[in-house]
Image 1 (cartoon, one colour):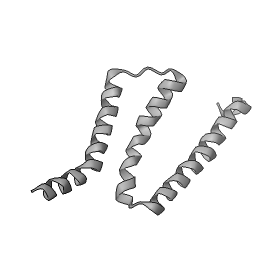
Image 2 (cartoon, one colour; image 1 turned 135 degrees about the horizontal axis):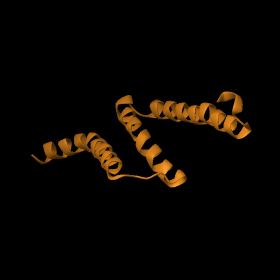
Image 3 (cartoon, helix red, strand yellow; image 1 turned 180 degrees about the vertical axis):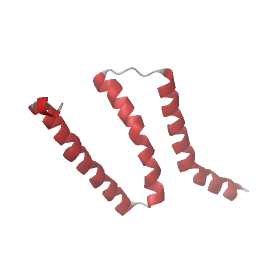
Image 4 (spheres, one colour; image 1 turned 30 degrees about the vertical axis):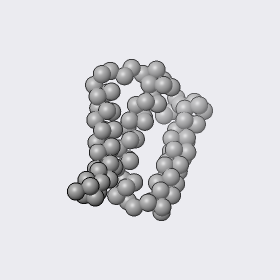
Length: 95
């Protein structure tokens, strides 16, 4: 419980609450100041993919096939979202 938490546990909580949150909001604000929201917002879908990859690398958590397939679907969806307007413009210019 909370009463049994040691200094390392509280340091981890502080890092999650302050470090990650402040970095995340600062990066998000910086990106939104420089790019349209419609371009930046889909990138939020990468958060679980990076979290899953980091937990596999740092904590040696298993990556079953269904998680890899889910990550591939997210990446494919983002690629289509980012590249489709360029493909459509290229096709219109070629026609």
